Image 1: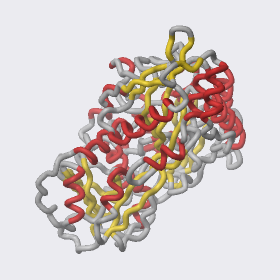
Image 2 (image 1 turned 180 degrees about the vertical axis):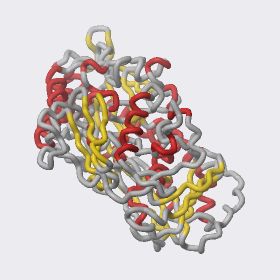
Image 3 (image 1 turned 30 degrees about the vertical axis):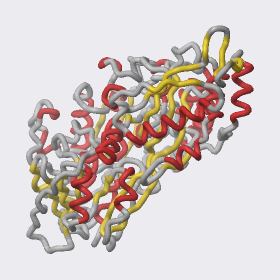
Image 4 (image 1 turned 60 degrees about the horizontal axis):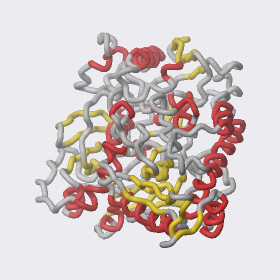
Length: 540
């Protein structure tokens, strides 16, 4: 599963274009000893306290602090056991021979923050609540493949599936699956958990949420009964800034200790601040150029391959401002176990021109290409509220012009460009020729919703309107087993097929920026979901 970066464009736009604003008053100090409470600035607030309904990155960050998951994902994208003691596999008996039953052994001695013991009953309750609420939650994928969940005893729970779902381990109560385990003893009285008040969240995580002032701050205190031991920090507080300029000012004035999701475009500016450690780290967010196969010009694979060969990915990545980017050729990150080195395309304008000639496009006056009366030209689109995307779009236009391809730029606000099919979104409704935007890949390499033939909108996210039998067969194979080595072989096929057919042209993986106190220890930014995966180890 992958998510479009609707928020990215707005953040970049704010970083580049927001006007200087008055500095807000200093955050109110807490009664906890100075230096033991980590004060973080953020731009934007959470939209509620129900983990099933939140979709913003900040909401996931808060969930990692308050709640527990079967597994978190560390800075190397490895599973870190939390509420479950081991990752189910065929070898340890956690995955049945037919792949339809998953058994989890739960950690003994874990308590909810009100002192109630955590048991398999909580897992069964939360799973059933998610399945019942699938029309209301932000990401039901995978959960609708569950037939039933049963508690074998207090410390063992079993998931029975309707069909084998290869990304199950990374979905069901894993950090990358978004949803944590919730307390049955608190929430079972509500017939619809999506309407529960969640005024005082109770989790099993390292910090308790003690106060949320909407639009102002979120205050968390260390959970003294946390199963790993009391966190080294006494607390964490998030203060909301009205703009990115204001956030930088708060840091510069010494009124905050860090900014863990700083816009990458601000990296250079942030490094000028004193007393902080500013880090650039890889992410799973990749920028790519999608070519609409409903366009009769772009459905010719020779034209698509020529476009790919005209693009210098390394040069484009080097132009990404701030925290930077890493040139890429596939939608699966080099950080993933499924990554394949493959036949990585290299820029070759001469070969690009030769391919276009073989497709019948002949040189015409003005260094254009014509086939009969038709000029080789199409429209480029990206988010008009993302200065970075627009800069890369202009560079792409120049590279394509170098091989005789003419493009016209027609950009849209990000919420219009990437709106769902039912809302008439430009990309998903197929109302574009070539679109430049970003996806965030999941921890599991499954990309079937983006590329399989049966996922063309409105059924899925195949905004390419492209069907490739070889890729389809490999996607089905990769989803038919939990065996990573087998899946890796299938994903080698999908990565190379995507690159060779060039219906989508992956350009680079973006990097993230984080600001922490110069003397902070234990912070290790993670590429997958949240940097808060090991907050119990942080210290100042």
